[in-house]
Length: 164
Image (cartoon, rainbow, N blue to C red; front, side, top):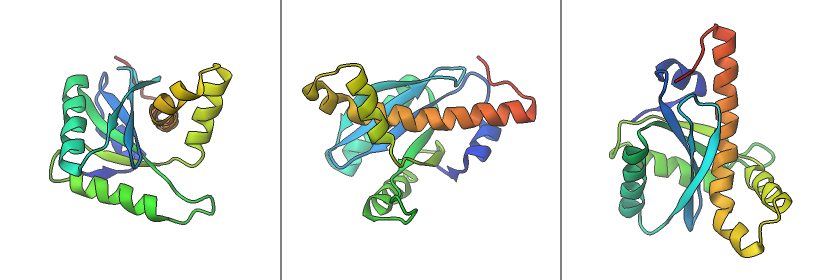
């Protein structure tokens, strides 16, 4: 497994390969998937956190089932750009995944992704209980959508087209 920049991931992905977005929380891992054309991020059910080996296996099972070519994982930077304890936990999770998979990871600045997800769910008039269930996967979708938008921009600037 390798940690790549979004530009490096763009160069390694073949047309028709989907990528997954992750929002790593203390209680859950929010999941989202791209479509095969890598245009849209769609929330998927969360993984309830247990211990690392169980979490890793659940993530790898998801990746195999969905034919994931790589992961975009939210990096929860502080608003001032500094790295706090959640950044360290995210980096440790990815380091530990190195022993489990060859799939690449891209870190993506996730500042305000949960706020954006919460606002969207509120606009959709989702109840408080259902928002609590869906917030992490919605945040993972915001994280992944940001990366997909960047991949699309890179493709246009290179004259390439990511399509299925």
